[in-house]
Image 1 (cartoon, one colour):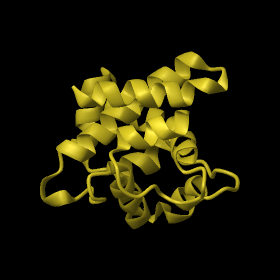
Image 2: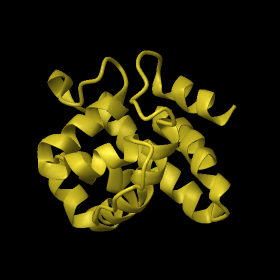
Image 3: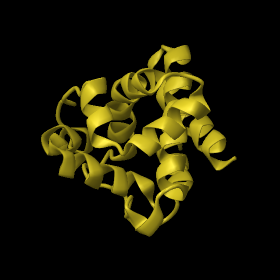
Image 4: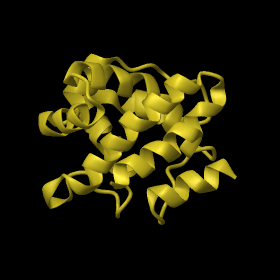
Length: 145
């Protein structure tokens, strides 16, 4: 499944910080999330021209997390987000699907996403802007070079 490949890429992107276990599991949960947003949303709710990262940022912004999301994209300090805030921002069916794929409860999935997402978005946006065009896998590979 594409989510697993995406999770592996995200895990290797996050794994460079010395906490390999956390980077790997964080990558898997984020891979499951972005895979669910890319393929599981009807009507393009996740938006973003084939790039679920842009759709996810839109979703967080509309849920009142604009300052946090922008801090991850920008070049300054990353603001933290809680699992509860993530759970509120994501559609229940998306969080349930991610939790099922990861083998955890929806609250555990939200907590893991809250831990991993700021670092992942920060690493995927080194120029302080969301990448345009290309698949998310291509964007991740470009950041690893």
